Length: 71
Image 1 (cartoon, helix red, strand yellow):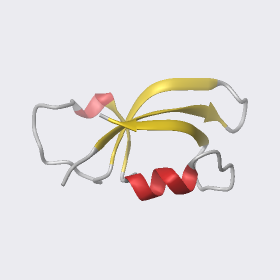
Image 2 (cartoon, rainbow, N blue to C red):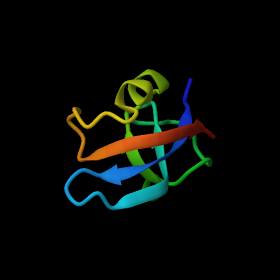
Image 3 (cartoon, helix red, strand yellow):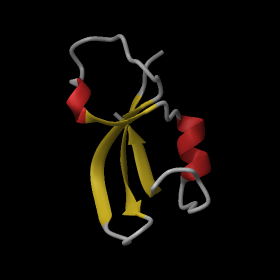
């Protein structure tokens, strides 16, 4: 099942905050009409991944997630 999440956080390099970025749990979502490809910030982040990354700077990503909600 495809899920979408809205995340907030900051960039590791300069600590600049962001909010309202959309991520999805699938690498290639097939469900049409919800979001355009350019609306998706990051693919392949499911809820477990988001929980693991929450307030954790020790990830492979260039950003830290400080909050997320399913949308």
